[in-house]
Each structure stands twice: as C-alpha cells, then as structure tokens.
Image 1: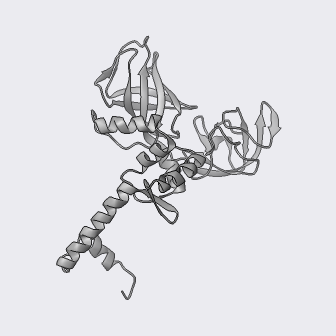
Image 2: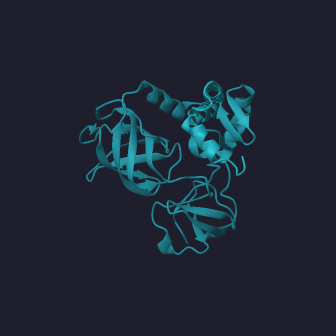
Image 3: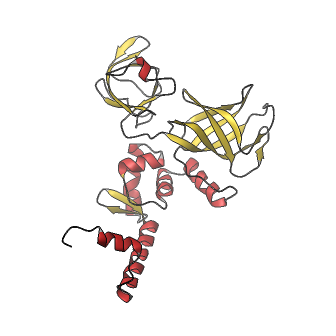
Length: 281
C-alpha cells in the first residue's frame, strides 16, 4: 500500500474515480493502476480527495515511492522547481525574512529546501505579508491554492498559499507582475484563464488546465463565455487570447508585406519554413 498524497483533476468536487483507474506517480513519472483502496482499514471502491487513503498500486514496490510523492491523474500535473507564493511571516518569528533567504519549504507531505525571492520588498518584518517566488532545490508537485509552511532549523517562521505553481522568473518591483499575481489569486476562472494564456501560442484544454491551475470543469465552463465575448479565439480544439491573435495576425501581415516588397530577403523563420517544407515543394 502507498501512503503518498492523493490528487485528482476534479479537486474536491468529484471522487478519485474507482479501483482500476490508471494513475501517475510524481515527481518520478511512474505509471500504475489502482488495484485497491482503503479508508480507515475498510475497502472502498472510490476515494474522495482530502480523505486519508491507502492505495494498492499495481507494479509499484514500496521502495519506488517516498514521502511527498503524489498519485494523480496522468498528464495533469507537472513537477515544478519554481512557484509564485503569497507569504506571511509569523508575528513571533525570530527575525525578519530577507530577500534570498534559504528555508525549509513544506507543502502537502513534501519537504524541500527553497530560496525565497521577495518581489516587492527587501525584507518582510514579523507579521507582514507580501508576494514572493520560491525556487526549489528539488522538484515538487503542487496545484494553485495549495498551502505551505516555511521553517528554519529552529522555528516555523511563516506560511501562505501557492498562487502559480508553474511560475516564470520575474523581475522584482514590477507593478505588472504584482497585478498578474493578484488576478491569479482572486480573479474569476475567466480572468485566470486569460492571464495564464497571455503571451502563449494556442493551447488545447489539457494544457489550459496545467498552466492555469484550474480544474477541468472550471476550464470547460469558462471557455464558452470567453469565446462568446470575443476575448478568446478558438482554432478547432486549441485556444488563444484575442489580444494574442491580433498580435500574431499583425506580425504575419508584416512578414508577408516585407516578402512581397523584397522577395529575396525572407526573414529567417520563413526561410526555414520554406527550406524544410514537404519534398517536391
């Protein structure tokens, strides 16, 4: 039996499926199948997220899993080494937390060392809150909204919420970064989806679930509203923001205009596309 953390794409609203479901064990990427489930020593056919569950996994030895591993729906979660966080320092912490501090980071049943980059201050005093980015020494598996605690060897000094588990590196003291994080934390599903898609190429629904931190149902419910309001553009089963599509169309038009003016001076990307085109073209 495995006592690793149990995660499902439907968050707390649906069951973890039934015995026989295919699963993925992260961060190692092992694939397995649920042979049996137990809750408080009683066999069950399905388990709800948030409950304490023992899982009998096919073709997985106890030595293959360890504390902090996550059993989840295949291809939903991706291990991360960087996350945007909302952080509060305890009033009784021994001292302020400085930018660049190394701490012990605890979320779920996982523990790793993290370097904390403060995004809007040089330090956080006892009792203060702020936006930060955590860079992990070892990959962890987390979803938007997961809670965490940070510790030094001698004391618990603070904690908070993971806002973006697949964060890009940010410049500090940037108002646009802070506004984006506030949308991720407090915005509607539609706002979060648009924010996650900003600057990205067209994405399919599984990718939207991964980059937004929303559940599959939340993404599916948000898409029709965004498309009908012309804030999202659909390409078969892929989606892109209307702003992103407008920029892409403008860039394409400029490339074609330059080509027609100077056919021999193709941009490198267009030249490569022609060079690597189908044989006989």
